[in-house]
Length: 111
Image 1 (cartoon, rainbow, N blue to C red):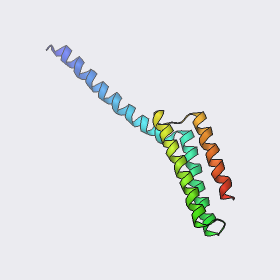
Image 2 (cartoon, helix red, strand yellow):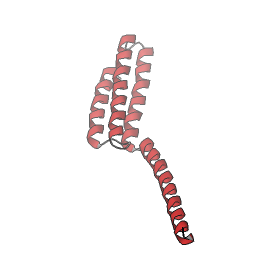
Image 3 (cartoon, rainbow, N blue to C red):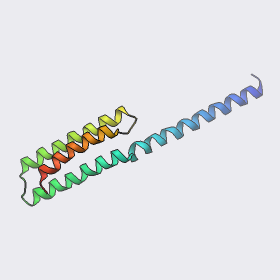
Image 4 (cartoon, one colour):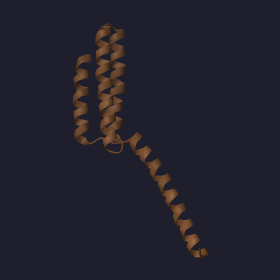
């Protein structure tokens, strides 16, 4: 193989490897920091805290707290499923549906 061709192929291979590594790390950051996913997950975390507070204060019983947490768990599973179909993010329509479900759980917590 000619030295010029060998150098060109080596350079192309190196560029491909670097581009692939950069793309993978960018995907991870995009998936973890996507604003719509972050908002949905922050609301779920806040609702979980509110469920615990309501349970400690006696506003809801153990069974109600369990059911509310299961509802939140299903919402989180749906968010993950939606994100897996769209390269780590959720659409506005999906976020609206998740927010609707979160609103229902939030009203059931009652605080």
